Image (cartoon, rainbow, N blue to C red; front, side, top):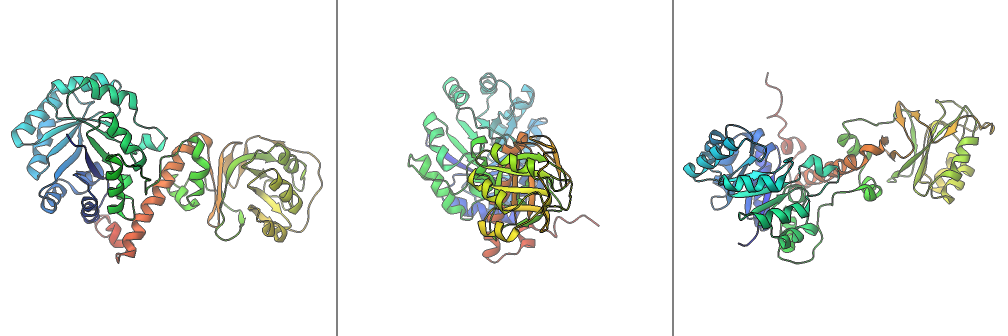
Length: 430
């Protein structure tokens, strides 16, 4: 069987989904999936709408059914779905009922193995229950943590079962070809297509990759620990704030930063007293390339940092300084191009007395900061991302950025922000 490309419409609005689906089909998409968010948002009517728009295409209803398998399959099949998904975690009787209802109403069943502990064993079991497809699915929340579909398990499932296997979860043009080589029949891609400014081009690129051509994705990859500097450098603090649900914002500090510049790096924390610049300057010698020195002075008004410290820091590869207190020599620091954030700028500096510490937990602008946490600053403000969640927040921020790019493209084509998001439709019922 020739492999197929399934576009997953994981959106909220029907009209947007139809427009994007047309672009994807023009680019070569074979199957159209009504993603779970869209199905919950619009109900089974979205299946009817898509069937009317694409009478010759296979329509997949991603119901992720866990119970009442027969009834949910009946609803989706009667609305026009060709394939309905059931969770591998569901009871055998639920899957059997879904298969029986599918045969009655002319639909096939795909079992989604998301979060199934032993996916090889379960794949063999559901094959015996009569399902038509097995889907190895890495959920979006898992993708954001940098996880990828396990290729070894995938190959085992393909070798030890006889029904077509689908794979979903963070697939790009760079990785699609590898899944085809492994024997995957159905490549399922959502964000890699629907977030693209040019959906047709993105789809066509992925189809070329599936045919064995070496191509580059028009949508970004998922990032791991090694790629965090690149990831955070590609997004704004606004994107990060949206992804982090408004957490991590450091309030009250002024950006002394060039227009369009972005400060990104890992925190090296310093605690000191009013005007005592000893520990901040000593921290420069301990800093690693790519660090940002973050200084807690408790908002005190005498400067603990200036132009000479900035010059020294630049020599060590330090990417910027954050001071919950005062800074001086701002004119010279800005000429150096050294990013700085401080509560205030003053002409006076104190004396090096050596109070405080380096590398300890501090509090800046209301936020706790540890050495190793990520600091991102731009003209919009300053934000700290704890190192424990940095990979997830970086990927979520990139996702926010890409979705905004798609919205921006729709506005460029003549829509408005309100129309794109169908705001009036989603206002609370009065």
